[in-house]
Image: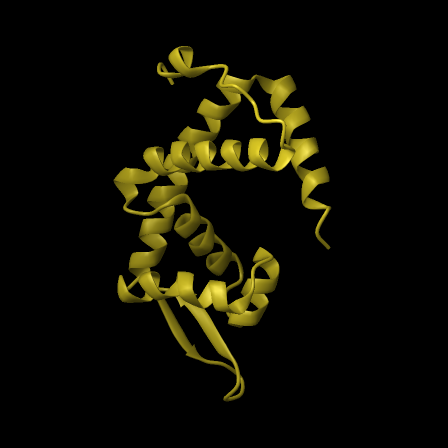
Amino acid sequence: MKHIKETYPKPSSPCNFMNIHRASRAVAQFYNQVLKPSGLTIAQMGLLRQIEMAEGKTISEVAKSMRIDRTTLNRNLKPLTEAGLIIIRSGQDSRTRQVTLTAEGSNAAAEAWRLWGEAQVSIKEYLGEEDLAKFTKIMAKLEALAP
């Protein structure tokens, strides 16, 4: 986080969306850099964790829990399937499909999770506990804008 002294504060935009979007991209880049040794991006790690916690659920149920549409989820599942990290099988009926982690997927998720913990500590140290608590509350409030 040494580079922060050189770049903070960045000029803000008069547009709230742009400020939130730019901050979101910067945080994603930070997490992706920390997770790089695992071979996963923060989005892929999050997806593997969701699949791990939703073991036996359908793709539709996983998409709903992640607040994304099925098309986006299917697109994001493809590289994980090709990498052998997940398996997609037929569900209870022919219209549903279930997604599960492979052993390799579990190992990759565990390594990424360990690195994610390091990123979490870094963010907490950078923001401080008080600002992080405020930030978390504000993000939950903003997320509530969409049902």
